[in-house]
Image (cartoon, rainbow, N blue to C red; front, side, top):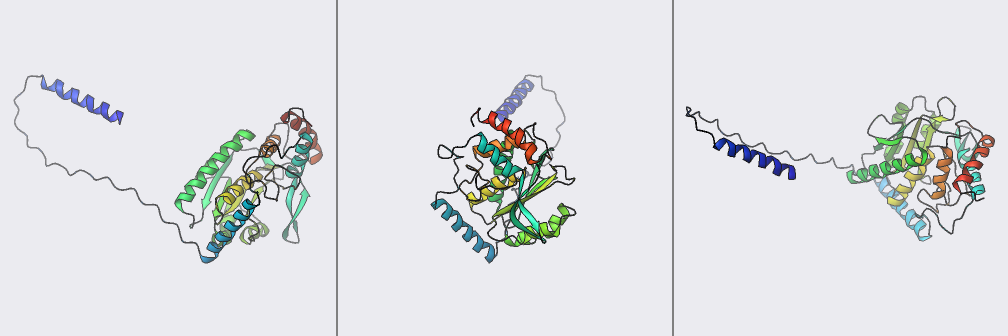
Length: 320
């Protein structure tokens, strides 16, 4: 508005100066007919979301009951931990080893089973570009909210790790799908195009995901060096707000290299007891340890433990 007033004032000053000059006789020139003012075109309305089918609507009610039940039990905490969840440097080291140096699942007979398996240290060494893809049933308002949440969380993770992490509209290397049941089952061709050479097992893990699995992520280490170059996360569009946010926190963070869960980790989202919904102070320390320059991709747990002990002592201020 103030710029408009400035333009108007300059225009009036020019008119006043012109009025002081001696008038010059000129032949009258007929004016062209006034052009009709061009009407501003209304902004296009966003395309309405597709209507979820009956199965998806039933699942949405199911996950709402799950969330309400967990909240009634005092779970899905959002406080990050406190006086009731103390931990020391030794616990931090053990939790780091179990969460960063083990995988949550093992491939047995062409199927994935939940079995912690010793691995090596994995993390990203290149900028992470998160690209979100929504199913047609996700409303525009929800998409806007989810994008804002992911952008804010990406900024937080970037501060913790020192790694460039951002949200992009295309060309991502960390793809996040927020889809309903039917859309997830149909993701096979998209995954095969996105991740050339992806195994049938990995595709089935996504398309056949049981309702007991709220969300999932897998990251790729193409040259077996411990350096991730691509990740894919699947978030159920049927989740109510807090379960959805909890899935985003856990899966996005696990895709950075904290790939396992541990029943001993507390306060932590890397624990299947659902006590905490969102990334905690403990988990932030795990991320700092993982992306400390003294850690190296490909380390085994014995190599990583020596470094973890030094970093944990620093993070805890010398406390054991």
